[in-house]
Amino acid sequence: MKQASIFISFLLLSLSGISQKVYDFNALCQQAYHEITRLKIEHGQELIQKARQQNPDNLIPLVLESYIDFLILFLNENPADYKLRYPRFSERIDALDDGPENSPYHRFALSTVRVHKATSAIKFGKMWEAGWDIRRAWVLLKDNKKKFPRFIPDDLMYGTLQTMIGTIPKGYKWLASVLGMRGSVTEGLKTVQAFVNSNDPSAKMLMNEAHFIYPYLLFYMDNKKDEAMAFIQQKKLDLVNNHLHGWMAANLSLNNKQSQFTQQIVQNRNHSAEYLDIPIWDFEMGFVKTFQLKPEEAIPYFERFLQKFKGNFYVKDVYDKIRLCYYLQGNTAAAEKARQLVLTKGNTDSDADKKALKDAKANYWPNILLLKSRWLNDGGYHREALALLHGKTENDFDKEEDRLEYVYRAARIYDDLGRENDAINAYLAAIRLGEFRKEYYAARAAVQIGQIYEAKGQKALAIQYYQRCLDMGDHEYKNSLDQRAKSGILRCKGE
Image (tube, rainbow, N blue to C red; front, top):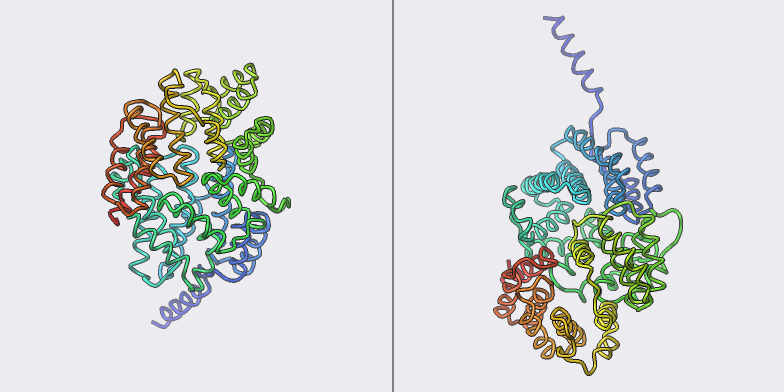
């Protein structure tokens, strides 16, 4: 009996000496997170190493390293990086599984790495694998909210996933159905907005990420583009020294037809070599110069992007822009060479790349006047775009597709100039001419009318036109336009 007691005592003493894994988002880890989410990756990694030396049993450094791999894969899409970094997500998940389940950070950490893994997988075409990781992250977050309802850090990703799942386009709806996920745009946005406005210290700790995500949700999911841009200004986001915020603002302003602001952000950013080198800056500037009708300046930016970028997303689209820039200059030989590259380079995972390939295969060369008008309008030069079309009617164009594009282009310019009645009439003409064609103009026209009526508070009419977009058959940008239409319907219904 005495020997048994001695053995048990020895065993307990031995076990008490075994290190215990912990989740300690301490000051050093917070500093590392701050640097990583500014894209100062190397400095962030150095701080992670210090945090690990301070406490080898702290699991938060694993999560921080997941941020590094995710950002590098997401922004640069390099297959060599993917081969090296993607397996690390699974290794981290295995290591985190051994963490203390009584900590609210346990499921939070696991769900964060799952989301990083899923988003990286999407960039490399692994949709099914990504879907399963999103589902696992979703379940982890839901469980954590039940167990720790006052744990605020969950809310940022939970609200984001809730919003995104609620607007999955028809082309990918099977994935959400099979995985048993249901979201809500309204509830998701409320959750993220509450997180952004929270004074909770744990929320403020993750605010770099929140300030990156929330404007995207406002812009694309809630269709509050001006509010998204105002948010960037109101929060006084550092667009010079935080490259993640700078990239977000440049991207959104470009898509909001504010190309001059995009140019300002790209040119004024901190050019220190301490930041992750991302080709996206050249991509953005290429479009800025395109929209300014300066093809000779746009082409070098696009070519530099293609030289540095190792991924596939938007590669066909960029070659297509090079093709059209040469076409605008009258250099038919160079334009044809670029068209051949559209056929062989990149992939068609994005709608823009699909359209580029379609046009290249059809050997389609747009009407020069309409091309110039489109680019000026896309850059925010609405009056200059309208001046090019002054005195024209649809009868001035011989081809049916040009007549369709003319009325659609006029509608978009009127819309951007606040001439709503003129815009609606022109959009209706675009629907009349293009509802049964493969071009995207009619579907986008229906979405734009829906947005006009939604802004006026005429939600029944808005839903009618959003649904009209959804009812249109196969056309360019089908998935992305359906997602916009579905988001609009859910907003109008308050779902």
